[in-house]
Image (cartoon, rainbow, N blue to C red; front, side):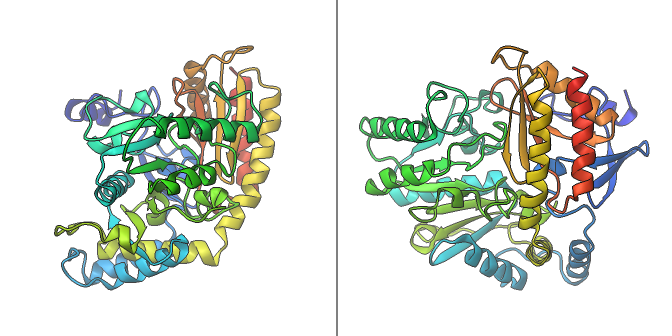
Amino acid sequence: MTDLYQRHRAVLPDWLALYYEDPIELTHGEGRHVWDAEGNKYLDFFGGILTTMTAHALPEVTKAVSDQAARIIHSSTLYLDRPMVELAERIAQLSGIPDARVFFTTSGTEANDAALLLATTYNRSNQILAMRNSYHGRSFSAVSITGNRGWSPTSLSPLQTLYVHGGVRSRGPYAALSDAEFTDACVADLEDMLGQTRGVAALIAEPIQGVGGFTSPPDGLYAAFRQVLADRGILWIADEVQTGWGRTGEHFWGWQAHGQHGPPDILTFAKGIGNGMSIGGVVARAEVMNCLDANSISTFGGSPVTMAAGLANLTYLLEHDLQGNARRVGGLLLERLRAVGASAPHVREVRGRGLMIGIELARPGTDEADPDAASAVLEAAREAGLLIGKGGGHNTSVLRIAPPLSLTVAEAEEGAAVLEQALRGL
């Protein structure tokens, strides 16, 4: 046990999770690689939980942060903030939401918390629909709508939450149905539930469930939900904290796979836009965003330094077509991992889009989740110089793969080879 690990355990909560039997301290990074305190180099396939979106130590972002910090670091939203206005203008235009307004926070948790405040105020109701297997953050309100018991430490809640079918395609009572039948069954379930409730404020849903193991419904399911919801005045909140900014390759936002009946009423974002800086936020059409009738500010949301980072990062992402790179390189990586999984007994499913890929592990010949196997692969990959993540609603048995969007074909092949070796070693 290292001295730093001993100090960590002495002063930080027991429930603060650490990866690896011998936790590592990351000291610096460049591109798609990071180094630990022992000098070991790793190919990063997790990006600080999908947050280092473009690259480690991206010069354009580090320069923007340095230049802004040399001018002024902090002012709060009580003063006009040029970088905040400029980033809000770009995000409003990219969001697809008409007459959009943007409110910045410091995290995805806080963004979802603000979205819930808007929805419940707008519809004068504390009833929320959420998806089974979902995760929306760590605050008291976000935990109360999380449909994953591993990340929900209390049943106490300021909200009345009802959980809906549909977020997990390959498990549950509808798994054997075709995509069209699956969608029809989930819509019928939603209609039946709404027939027994009164005054629901909103549905919140991740287009691809992140902590839940990168699982998703068939394309169009949330569009079908939207028709049912809109008829009843219920808002749709798209939690894009992990799916935004082109990570899925095919779309800039995850909701666009479900956009047949228009954009969501509220969109939340965070993680990748800051490339490691603390940025979250909410986009909503003006009538929803402006429904609050009390004063509000944000001390740290919209900080000049984080906004400068977000502007530089977004500019780099768009100018270098990293969405297209996620589609191309992610498609190759997904195909390669599916080929590996086809002959690896512990692999139940390889799924995902772009550079957001999940490998679900199960005990061979069964559908029983195998968290021990997931932990073993995590350790073996690290030993071979690759960092990946874990997740999944069924006992954390999904390997999560989400590299920076600038990943090269050679790096994708290198990471796939390490994963193949680790999976075959089970």
